[in-house]
Image 1 (cartoon, rainbow, N blue to C red):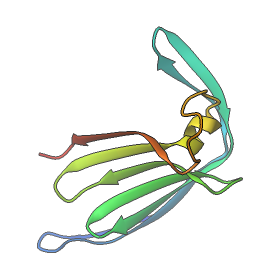
Image 2: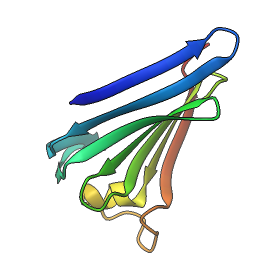
Image 3: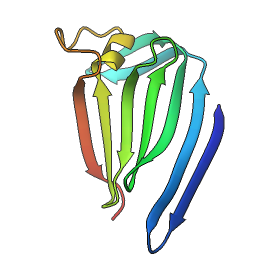
Image 4: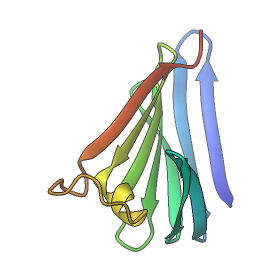
Amino acid sequence: ELESFFLVWDPDQGWLDARGRGQWPGGAVSWPMGDRIQHARLPPLEGNLSLDGQSLVLAIRDQEERRIGVEGRLTPDGFGELALRKHWIDLLGLDFGAGAEPDEVLFSVRQRVIP
């Protein structure tokens, strides 16, 4: 459910403002992993859109512990970045990154998305 979404962009100055909020009630999710399909049940989540300098940032956190699990970023030079933190891995019930702190980024990817 998208509760609010507000963007202001100027062709000369770039992003001037970005704000947004949405939430998801939680539930079953699945994803491919190797030759199998993995399943988990996620708690209610919320997403917040903001501006960090000239980068658009979407942070997804669980509503129970209020920790960011996933952060997506669109940089001014056209790159999309995605970071998964240990907390997200724990929410999915995966046994990965033992000994890592909940806010530690365990997986990140950066790809040009705008030429």
